[in-house]
Length: 127
Image 1 (cartoon, rainbow, N blue to C red):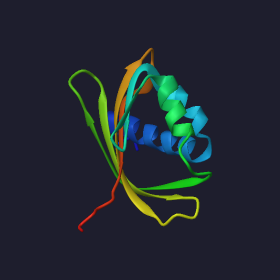
Image 2 (image 1 turned 90 degrees about the vertical axis):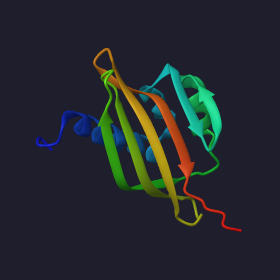
Image 3 (image 1 turned 90 degrees about the horizontal axis):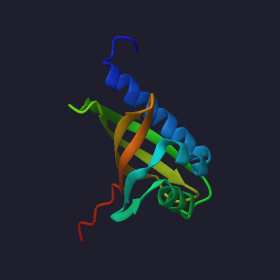
Image 4 (image 1 turned 180 degrees about the vertical axis):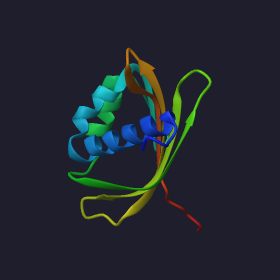
């Protein structure tokens, strides 16, 4: 991992941590958001740590497993990192579905937090 740029190391570590928390105990995700954070979940907007955790904790499934297919990370001129994830998820007994998620990470007081988070299932309606 030492030969990857630092923003890729930080982004990859964040992604691993995020999905581990999401898959095991979504209520713990509050640790990665701040009160100014924004979440767009399937087009619905949520702002603030409490609203985001409430939304994620109330999703209608008991168990979930994410599998990351690809992730990309870029540094921003303001010392933030943009991370994009493509993968698949399996919730309860539902079929496996594709998803896309994008994060904007910011270092605040020597901790990387998510200021912006956008999620969409990769569903296509060709009808």
